[in-house]
Image (cartoon, rainbow, N blue to C red; front, side):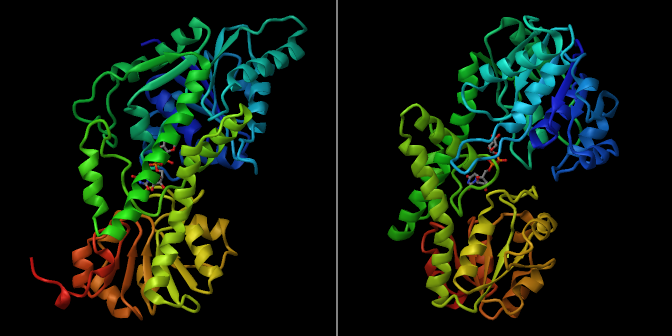
Amino acid sequence: MKSLNVAVIGTGYVGLTTGVTLAYLGHQVTCVDVDPQKLALLRAGKAPIYEPGLEELMQAARSNLRYTESYAEAVPQADVIFIAVGTPSLPDGSPDLQYVQAAARGIGEHLGPRFAVVVNKSTVPIGSGNWVEALVQEAYEARNGKKARAPFAVASNPEFLREGSAIHDSLYPDRIVVGAEDPRALEVLYNLYRPLVEQSFPAPTFAPRPERMEAVPLIATDLASAELIKYAANAFLSVKISFINEIANLAERVGADITQVARGIGLDSRIGTRFLQAGVGWGGSCFGKDTAALIATGQEYGLAMPIVQAAREVNYRQRERIVEKLQRELKILKGRVIGLLGLAFKPNTDDLRDAPALDIARRLLERGARVRAHDPVALENARRSYPDLGIVYLDDPLELAEGADALVLVTEWRHYRELDWAGLAQIMRRPLVVDGRNFLDRKALVQAGFRYVGVGVAGAEEVQAPSAVAEG
Ligand code: UDX
């Protein structure tokens, strides 16, 4: 394999995972970040984010990895330069591109004589490829004189990794999408990804290759298509989840069971079983931001996007439905003690961005309830980032249950299924559990003395203690 020289600007989830993965595949990678604390951690072999397998992969690839704050150290000799900086939402839903802009300028100022491909990995609005190209060229001219043509081409290479399974998703992607107008860019990126496409690298022990893994399709497109693929993929998944939640709400009314309905439709290969898990809905750094950005792009072009809009509305209403369930059970929320099991927006991460738990907590607090919360990993992040919300953060689920009127499962950490539920029921003021992910073992909970309320689960709201349930 031909080893390439790679620079990655930005060491967030996407940048760091990309850099470490490419280093593992045998490329020479330099990661650039402006944050000296992050760099110190990285140089000490520590990942600044919680991501299973990431530190192990950093360790395995360490001879091919460098970390620096200096563009001058990373850019001039690079064959491929990734822009993987943050694009947070502005109040109108459009992404804030100031960091992308700064990265593009920094690259333009430091490009050497060698041909390089500048790759957008950050999720950027459609058309940003051309914008980045102009910024790089301008900065290059400012340094090297007017009319000096910078030796580079831009490409878009959207990232589809999920937090919590970032290493797995990077090593074993469903597909790789590369958009560029310049054929030289496509050729360089094909060489970069060849070990992934051919799956020719040795699988790390902590991230085994899935059985029957075949060659990974690499889709080459124009720039705009690659940029739109990223938004369309995230919007589609958001719609899929909101769709099943909408059906779940109806299932509750008609006495159907959404888990069976989801399986019944999902086994149709045109639909597929994944991302049909009903519950409190989606959160995280991507779905909310990208659906908002897609709608903002539509507006810019005079186009309404009612399906994406509806997916958002259904999603955020789903959080309120948890509060309604509690209200129905407890009648009065004022003064009630509610324990939230899970804060992270999903398991295996400490990420709290757009986390349903925080929203549910805010709504409960507004109604006068007292809210406690536990999370096996995200607790520290919550204490640090949200000290003043009014949530009491507790390290032990037992403390959470002590004297509580209800527990709400918000994040499906595996650990929560194995709690001593009978013990918890004993110490609560009222053994009520609202399972916001339909994740817990309903039968076992009812046997432990709980009243169990799920989301769209047949008769869930009528499940009684064992004495009242017919056998079989
Ligand atoms: C997502 C995309 O999956 C990924 O391709 C993209 O690169 C970034 O955004 P991520 O946000 O890390 O990844 O998590 P994901 O596993 O997709 O879950 C998103 C949210 O949807 C979570 O809050 C999860 O709990 C929720 N979800 C997921 C459901 O409510 N039901 C499901 O069936 C699946």
